[in-house]
Image (cartoon, rainbow, N blue to C red):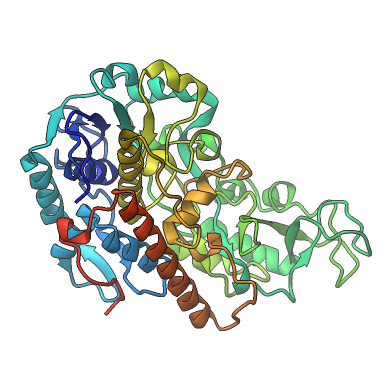
Length: 475
């Protein structure tokens, strides 16, 4: 087990998934950790207990299949010795090809690990200011999650710049490129000559009048997510969902996100009745964003209704649209690959600041755990006075980290791991199952190199320390 000087002190704010993982990882490396959690003294609208790592939504940690993006991420958690993933495995309940946990037993065991660790001081009070929270520490890790308190969010806004802190996650769906029907789509930017010149930046899904009217009819009657009171007060002021626009009148989307102005369908030589534009979400064109399609529909309804769009009949969703309360930073502008806050205002806090979990712009349970682990490795490297090895982009979290911290990423919204952000192969593998397995095998090889680099830098916490054993292969 790697050791860092016991005189090093780190304060971690937030005992959720990311914060608990970071605290345990650092403590196992010999760092003295002060873990600050405001619950149960100060509650939130969704938490029911004061337990560490309380799961407030689903109890599912997604697929364990090796040849899935979620499975690739779990492979990283196993091989890098995640403490919380080991707890999840010990508290698993039957869920087919997914990993689901007994959420009460899971949170209870994580809390016990934290409370009983000799190098962790669990402090129950609300942190109101980053500068005050950092006093007496060598490093500060902020992992306060999507429901960060108003006072602490205000302090973070001062350090990061208010324009780089969001309070609502209003994200449009993202679909995989290879699931689209190219025979029905055409590439063109608005007012671009369809008969010549360079191809446009957008794919366009043209509607006939009948197709449009059927789509709008299904859209306005589709089942929506019921917002909690604390979300619904301001949610629709942040961004109008496509279904709310449609409720203003059946033609409203045709004069908004679905306006066909400036487009010519090369198949007909005419402007379509309406058109959805899809913008590449990654540099490789492996996934596309449905432009202007922020939505509050349930995930099953998004699959049903959005597959009525011409060309999207068999669309696979890399991310569903979401609209909910979610405090997160503009990661491409603020975070380095080590998750360190690089905003100019951060210097006023007095110590290096790292972010982890949803506040850093990741989405998903295992992504939060993995980001807490990654932040801990980065902090441990800093305390040792050395650079942490770069996480390969071929790994699941490496691809997510590259996407989330790339300054070229615009209009950033929180993302979970998916194949759309992994670098494609030079020679395309047409069979989807074979391609996904090839992604996983390539990622596993890259992870092995990364493990060796961590070990050589005395930064690898072996799986035996956390109880996570064996390969995550979905067996």
